[in-house]
Image 1 (tube, rainbow, N blue to C red):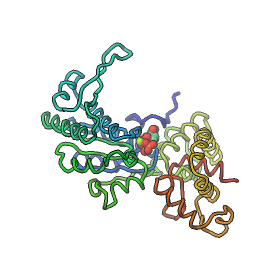
Image 2 (cartoon, rainbow, N blue to C red):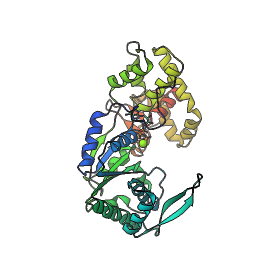
Image 3 (spheres, rainbow, N blue to C red):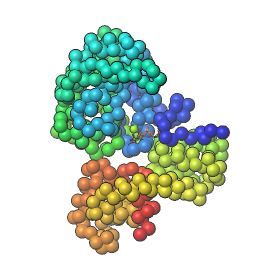
Length: 370
Ligand SMILES: Nc1ncnc2c1ncn2[C@@H]1O[C@H](COP(=O)(O)OP(=O)(O)OP(=O)(O)O)[C@@H](O)[C@H]1O
Ligand SMILES: [Mg+2]
């Protein structure tokens, strides 16, 4: 029997569950042509939700998806946008190329043979200037929409990446277009809440007030439990799923991954086996997280270790500070910096957690006992 838990790929329509409210809201905003900011921590399901909602849109609403994760300069963002629009058009390759040749003024096409022997057309910009390219991509897409009586939503996933791009003020340039576009709206999505809020929620920033926000937290616990029990064909012992949900902060991927191993090894659904599986999942990433940890400065490592040892609680007590030989000011500075870059969060109950739940669990396990 194939394992019924899928946690690495985006879920197929049969595997997608939960998120009814978020999906409905996102769908409605897209249909109304509104811009949306979709934010939430890593691996909770932002990208999955976007794809899910895109599948349900009517033919008159085209959808384009650009992952900005690997963009390091403004040119890359423009290329990603062209490619997304190109892919979104529901025409044959020949027709697409023709349409785009007439709609876009700054674009040519490269023909490359593929492994299967057919030809692949890749859009190739004729300029390197972001302002020019973005204007061309968006106005070209507007012309196509107008001509075919369609509208278009473009998802810019991992949008926090634009804060790292320094050669152009992408947010300011986008703003000028956002105000003018008639047929195009955007879904901006990303995981670094502090960076995204700085781009959208700070009054001084160009994108302030330009979008409606949807926050993606954990899938509702009872729904998640039922989904897992159905697939495991067994019930969790009392309190066990709640324990799993709490340890993983409800993170979709980690819970599904736990389900995967519980199923694969046909384990009883007890506290012991859940903790055992979580340990295994943490250990799998040991090498990667060691490297990640060593990329922080000595002082930052000290603070991350404190978070691990005290599980993010009571960091400022005299005992904590003495034990780690750190001053209140230094601790405060490092925490603020780590929060600013989105690596750490202060929760409602005043505890500090590492934003990436998996990395947090690794820190607690590997450094917490020392
Ligand atoms: N609603 C859902 N139903 C079923 N599986 C889901 C759902 N949401 C997320 N998943 C699972 O969780 C994994 C992580 O989700 P996804 O990649 O969408 O998260 P993300 O928030 O976009 O993460 P990142 O910030 O790292 O890009 C997916 O690969 C998928 O297996
Ligand atoms: Mg994603």
